[in-house]
Amino acid sequence: MENNEKVCILEGITSVSALIKSIREGTARRSLFRVLIDESKKQKEFRRVSFLRAASEELGFRLEFVPPEKIASLALGHTHGGIIAEASPAEFPGIEELNPAKNGFAMLLEGAEDPFTLGHSIRVLYSSGATALILPERFPSGADTALARASAGCSELLPIFVCSPEEAARKYLKANYSIAAAEIRDAEDLDRAELTFPLLLIVGGEKRGISSSLLKLAQKNVKIPYERDFMGSLPTESAVTVFAYELMRRSRNAEK
Image 1 (cartoon, rainbow, N blue to C red):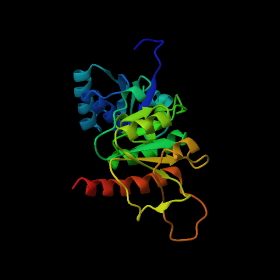
Image 2: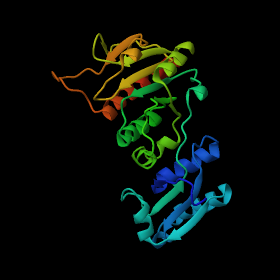
Image 3: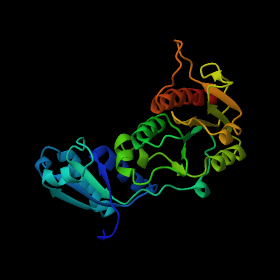
């Protein structure tokens, strides 16, 4: 690593392992420079140390044992477990590299700019089998560390594309996807709506919602039904969770 090279810190064995997995699979969006391990955990974390040592020999990144104060000075939080990695900032592909999958569902998330909200949503989408996440061009730069931490490393593994939402939606339409919008106006309840797969679901942020240009591209609006007369809305990551697992269930049935 050169002195003038930008560095992103990944915290904890889960995030570091996810990056290693992406490198092995040839899908990595960043380079891994070195992994730092709290020297006091060398014996206690024998399995993890053995895994990281083997990976460093295979992939060529540096492995160093350092005082715990060194790790504390570099880490954003306190849940790293004595393991952090120095890596390059992530480079997310754009519209040119977006090739919609033949089956399943993808999500376009507009207006969720907080890295922790995004990270939690990415964790949900990865675990529920979403084929891709589309983020707008205003996706915050420099949020890699918080994003990786909040997503438990899933931001290294889920296909994420940063591009114009309208261009992405049109590309999905050309790929014979149906498009639905998580919009309360003129909407059907999610549990009763007929949904056709493959599907792109557009979800807006809590403050701005979905832009009118995207709503025009949606063929159907769906909403989360509430048991009580509730005038508010769910937090973004909660709404993403409800939608993602319902789409996972529907997608499974569609493929039978």
